[in-house]
Length: 189
Length: 365
Image 1 (cartoon, rainbow over the protein chains, first blue to last red):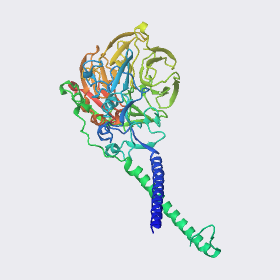
Image 2: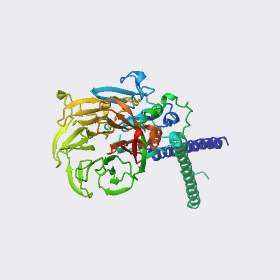
Image 3: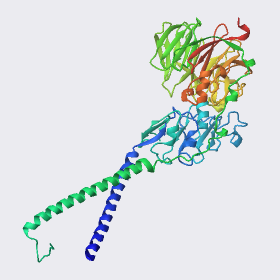
Image 4: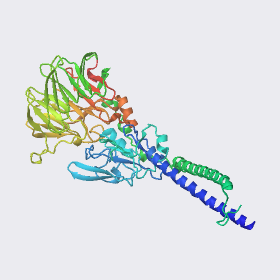
């Protein structure tokens, strides 16, 4: 009786371990399949629909939004008076904080040659509010616009910003080409 | 029955045991498969539904410092407005961006698909479909039109049929404005950032305004396809330098004489990064200028002194609505002006796709 009982306990233990192993094996397989199937698409902003409402800055699940301003330098006019960089009526056309439009100081201005200046987005400071984009769209040629940065985005199944975007500017692009850059069409980076 | 090498099972009892083993194996396999399947399903669902589904932690709304606000510049003092709208008509065109008056006073408007000619009463007189988008148009001496397309100038005769194509294969030729005199045709090329001087047969005879610091020419700063040239009554060309917010006077040989204008969102200056987008010169040498971003049509005397408005931003509600909403419709749209023989200002609004005929207030009946 004692031997039989020992045997059945061992069998039970063995069976349980096997079962857990199988379950784990299946779970891992399912997780990988799930991850693979989800990685087929990525959320992205269609800059031609974006209205710079500010929700990209507030509605992302990340503490600091994965949406950032990007700048297509090939389109930029390298203007001395950039309406994405300067307050509408700046005191001076220089880099003084009082003259800058961006509340987080996320645009760097660099002199190239008279009268041209280069503007670069400081990604770590950009919160994706779109204020500069509005200035660029209204007065310039739209070389600055918002994009989801996919090294930051965790690719939520239902993007929290896409849900609230009033312009329905979010769309899913193939994971292999997840950016929609102006001047390059879809898939550029 | 206990098996042992010394006591092998006989053949009769082995068969039911084998069958029982097979059944047991099958059952185990089925259970194992089910368990793996359930695990897989759970893993898949976990990844798909839960692991990347996060609730956004509520963040405070953005403060006013995150709002782009130019509303204080979108209203003008009514006392500054010197013109009144006499007539307005819809062109029925898509984002029209070229405007010229014919010798008969007819109004020619161009868009992405061709030209339409209207009477001053707004009646469409003629439609001329063209294969290429129209960037600019100017009346041709003796009748017909010069039409600016990317890559060349199309010559249309008085009947609207093609009388020539002046290809400009060098660089990226974007002719955004054409000025015609008896001796030459001056084309503002926004792609090359120069004014190209052509003879009446279309042969290039000079390039005006290329950067040459030895001649005190800083070059034209043209961030977007808005670049305007006109001939003034004093015999000097007037060429907009939109990135510098100036109108510059050049001799027909390309020497820079004088310049005026400054950047400012205030009504006296040119707003944004690339204004004025177009202008026209009155017979007395004074100017009417057009701006985008803040849609304004303004008046300056012959020396560049601000003297009032033809129309302020509030006169362009469709434009302001699109601009304030942040929609990309405000990209690549402008305001254009022409002056007719009666001194009226003809204004083309790209966003509203309308033509307005503006008359001086003191001359209003």
